[in-house]
Length: 83
Image 1: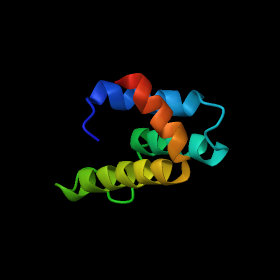
Image 2: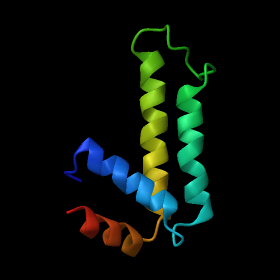
Image 3: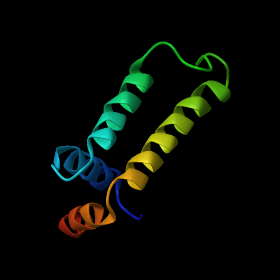
């Protein structure tokens, strides 16, 4: 997806507010944010590179799960509105 960061954040917010988005998906988004804000990590952040890499992997896995579980027509509807 060639969207700006702002457009991606808008898409995430719209998907979170859409009633057609499954509840599981709406639960994944805040869990990823809580993990990122939490001082407890799988790999501590003071370890160079690996500490930040686990955060990046959690975000990527969360995004992949959101896109996989959200019906494609819901995503397409919101992408059309963003263009």
